[in-house]
Length: 185
Ligand code: MYR
Image 1 (cartoon, helix red, strand yellow):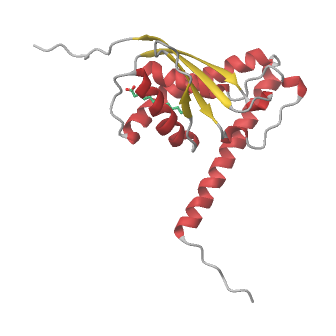
Image 2 (cartoon, rainbow, N blue to C red):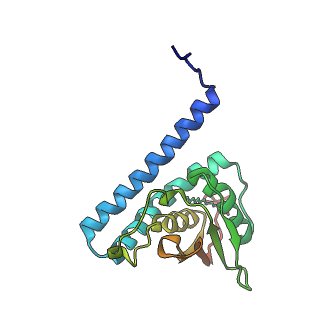
């Protein structure tokens, strides 16, 4: 009889993480599919995914700040790096690179070479125009809004549309200085 192989705790944990990630990816796929059925128009699905992401982002930022221990960023350039290296890693398990800054430092791209949301995904021709990962743009917009940064976030490259990477353009529209909520006497 083959000996029973006891896997180390680390191996079991890695396996559980992989299964969780796959479950998350498949669940997201099921949500997109359901929206396509319910809303019919891909433009509406794009909007709905973005809105769902926004609603997640405005809640997720608290967890992010509590767990990450990052100190509040002074400059938008720092914020972009934090999203790419810490935020993406925490919630998506991958990091992004930050590139293509504009001259005034208000717009940059977050580039993902690896995107676990699209594992197992192939889009049929009827879904042209769909931004499958639009939930991510909403998450970033929502999270940043809570920390007083109004942004516009759009996809400029998407591998499901034949591009060579996933690229999100993040534009800082307005940074509202945060106010201490209590008056000093
Ligand atoms: C600051 O500027 O004070 C720090 C703000 C950091 C914002 C980090 C937002 C995290 C968003 C995570 C996105 C994950 C997408 C999967």
